[in-house]
Length: 227
Image (tube, rainbow, N blue to C red):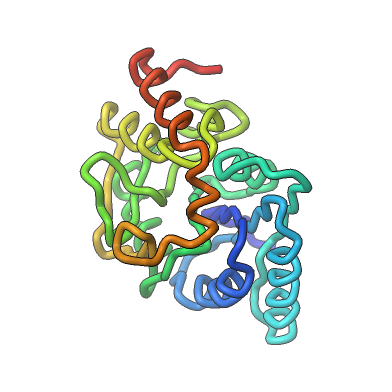
């Protein structure tokens, strides 16, 4: 079995049908790159069933399937990523979500850009997600070596529930001049910011927005301390 260059981690909470439609699209459009997709189901049996069903269909077609990690109790987006990283084999890690729409060669383009910019593996590359905030990109590719240097075996800032951790990651990388965005690598974030209706999944994920904001402000003031 080929060792993947990239481990793409996708926490899943809600939208089982949407998740099932997305998985084949991710595989079909990734481009020429060795990678694995790890779906971390965060206390959501319906999504786990949907992923197994699409995996069965992909297997019958002789196509790659997603690895499945099931969490019996909700952990939140960033802790779910940490669970996925435990089985991830790639030297690069990526965080995505089930509300993305992949463009052509969405993964191979960003991987090539990452390797050109950061031959030592210490960097972050952001997708063109259709939002492109000045201070961060929500879905990104990070070198495992940098992730472990900053956050230890968890590889992600698990202090947060759902929001602000992506801002921390990108701002830390910017401060070290280790951040790029590839506008040709498109992974559109189909999000309320760009007009998508606010559904129950978004409402649920924003329950702890005040606490996440407080954690971010405190950590930034302290210059991103380790646990």
